[in-house]
Length: 468
Image 1 (tube, rainbow, N blue to C red):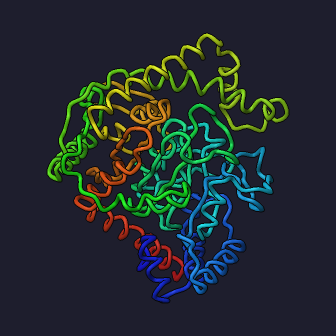
Image 2 (image 1 turned 30 degrees about the vertical axis):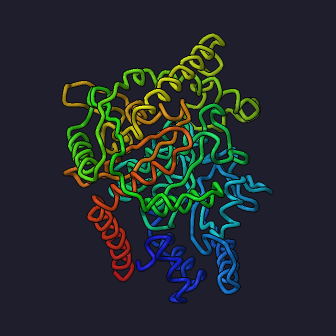
Image 3 (image 1 turned 90 degrees about the vertical axis):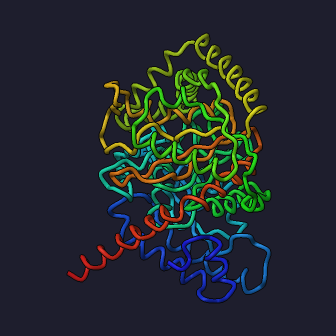
């Protein structure tokens, strides 16, 4: 597509090569042709999207100052959108239509974005896979046998499949970065509090974050600008000479898939070649991060859902009752101990960021698992549950509130995308964007060309099947 990035799309609008209604119709056609294979979108908002596209055309004609006029996006379906069904991926809320939008959705609409659909997710964002018994399991556009990650599965898959140019997801233990890694796109969990959470269904008020997912780093920066109403795009122009990159090899290599390790090492070499300075760091305190995140989120999720539990427990998906039972059984002492450890981890990470500018790890220690897979196996013969494996490197930054970004770093020999995670000090999103953009420009042209080719191949196969 000649408009496969936000910048290219906006340039095309300025040159009048196409109009927002034409672009939105093209995306709607693509969704209709392909999303039956991926199930990334619960509600396609064709009617309202075309109205927004017409409004974007007026903004362009009048020379308004909207930053993202006519840019098609999706929102994870736990983010309220006025007049549009917002299901939380659940049976309970299947007919819920809010009368107000979440602030983050309102900001992007003011910037001119067109909401083209509400993205599928794990029910109420309870899980890290793309399973959903009510709206269909989201399938990975790179290999439909594989999970798209979760819980923002539809957000990442809709971007990777070329159904939109960006999406807004939520992240409590890795739920933006894990699906971004699985689907070969870019996702950011910003600093806690940078983006407002009102109008977004609560999973864990201590750990919840919202953030953008896009096809590349400059597009991510533009979406972050619209969502945060602050400037970030300037960070894409800097080099990274002298950037201190913290590398916690002992933490990362304890259990890791060989293909992920090889791509991670190659990414470290690329960063060093660009002038970054590698610094070996000790991240051993993060070994307890999953337990701490669970100790906080488990009691909070039951409390957040207490009214739905009282009225509609039987309407939740399988496994929810067990989650709520654990939540009710959690002691106040255990919860406070997890909160104490959270404070300690935050202080330890703050201290590390005095000596390094970013910390780099793989996003996940293994490639995207098969749908229904229960364990990840490692060369040493050990096994780890998929749920724990996928968040092992991500949940630390939800606990501490530091910003963390996932971006592609290549393909395994089986053709599966692998994610690279970069984290930085609080409110240092510019540093993340600068580092990520420098790496992207130096190392990912081939990856993006492969992703683009696969996207076109999928549509070509569908067109041929239709003619047959």
